[in-house]
Image 1 (tube, rainbow, N blue to C red):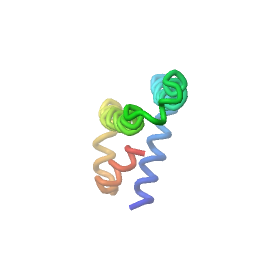
Image 2 (cartoon, rainbow, N blue to C red):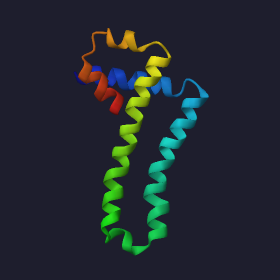
Image 3 (cartoon, helix red, strand yellow):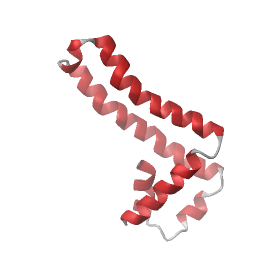
Image 4 (tube, rainbow, N blue to C red):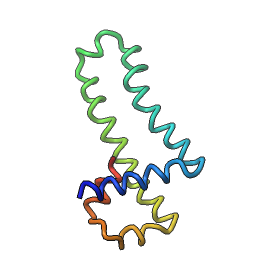
Length: 102
């Protein structure tokens, strides 16, 4: 099943770099962790490692990013009319979902 997951991951990375709209989405996706790991702690100061909100941000922000990207990925498959092909492939549903999560 791991090779099936890697197949979906490879396909997702291939489609990310196909057109400009997805490149800007990728840039936004990459800038968010940079903002959360550098800009906010720098502005917060030394209290960043001692306060409870930093723990919440560190746990909730990645979960929100993943929760937003997975439905968007399936919607992109539907817009490109490749979702029925993907679902009718020999890949198990669990491998498709886990591949989209990576």
